[in-house]
Image (cartoon, rainbow, N blue to C red):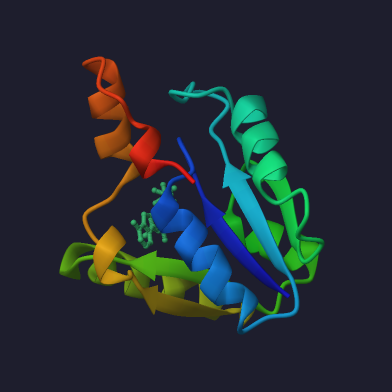
Length: 143
Ligand code: ADP
């Protein structure tokens, strides 16, 4: 089983693509919605969870959980054998390899980095939030 952690604020087609590909590698995928008690997100965490759960209602191999604190602590609590993350850019790569290294040193949990599919490589939650802020239709970016 793998943990796919993120803010998912909101959950996009890019995230859904990573989940689909992770399901080909692992028996189960736990989508872990991380939140910060000090910082409210764009979409309330309960709403993020509810919409992701609805999306995977017919996929028993996908579970959706929320967590706060360190991702590796939650990964260990869940009994995940690996953490899955997506990589779009070299900036993502630098950040993700650093996190992966620290997380492996802390707990021995490996991180599997999946390169973004080309059609979603420019898609991010922050772009979607920005478009929504200016009243644009964001439905094409959401699964
Ligand atoms: P975080 O705040 O932890 O980066 P995000 O919700 O922004 O959370 O992203 C969660 C994971 O999904 C990250 O590994 C990110 O790189 C990946 N991701 C986000 N958008 C895409 C995309 N369009 N294609 C592939 N991976 C993506």
